[in-house]
Length: 345
Ligand SMILES: C[S@@+](CC[C@H](N)C(=O)[O-])C[C@H]1O[C@@H](n2cnc3c(N)ncnc32)[C@H](O)[C@@H]1O
Image 1: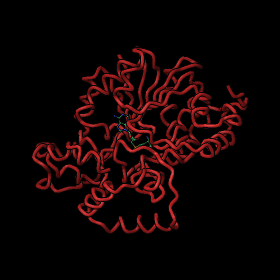
Image 2 (image 1 turned 90 degrees about the vertical axis):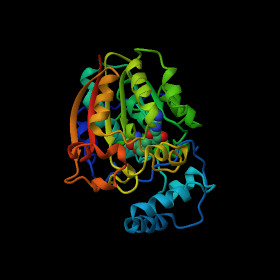
Image 3 (image 1 turned 120 degrees about the vertical axis):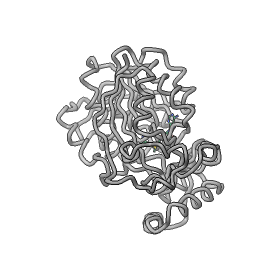
Image 4 (image 1 turned 180 degrees about the vertical axis):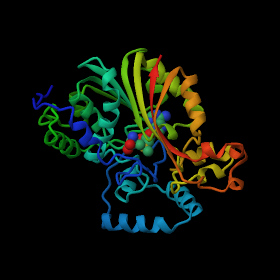
């Protein structure tokens, strides 16, 4: 085991980490180009000017109508191109966790909310959907976790050591103590140094975790991506793994992954829930705000709503909605996202 640097983490630093993590802030809360599930991360060099290509694609995307984005994503997601190359183009990314500022801010946001429920050092935590990196485990270790589960549905986390050294340097500069990574040779060594477990079988991975063994669960822009028929089983698993009195903190984005509106509600259930759509890079389960809150309660959680975000107007004409959404009140359709604490009773 690598040695631990002894610089102290100061609680007042939390507000600094939280800076820039407001809804709609420049940091990418909105993950538009969500990757198709099942892809693995592969390194691949791209013989083009990546920042320029990314900027051009970004500008182009602003002018493409929602249906053009859907068509482009369906086509692109079927090309034999690895996740790494899409990433280099800024497409089909699983969030922004490869950025130390973002990853640390996300962790601190959730940790600050639940730390009063944790009994000192040595807590066990679980992140659902860590996406592009395992930086959360480094943050959890630095804040006193004895064990950190990272559960995803694919091995999307970067595996190059320099990224983890960069995160360690960033954390050190922020005053966080973290095990030295000097002896780390692979990302597995980093995982060991963090006392972390990285599993990528989604619900099946959760089922392997002992009941009542976790103090704190968090997810950031993930719950809306869980396949609809897995949502309740997954929430029940999260409830099962939490100890009595354990807490979870979630940030949920209810916009579509096609441009930030509600164009995803145009489609009929049968098409939307098909594996064709689920593997096209823009799947969201379309569970609306009040329904999701109800499902949290049905899964055994006490719900403490922290923030609800709303569009000024429902961003789609009612007649364009698929029949299953026609009956929803405007008040529900206008919710673009929310932040919530769930307590295991
Ligand atoms: C939009 S990304 C967000 C990633 C990261 N939390 C962030 O803020 O950058 C959604 C993540 O949720 C993961 N995900 C989707 N369904 C999941 C499930 N059933 N269990 C665990 N993770 C899941 C995806 O693979 C992806 O990594």
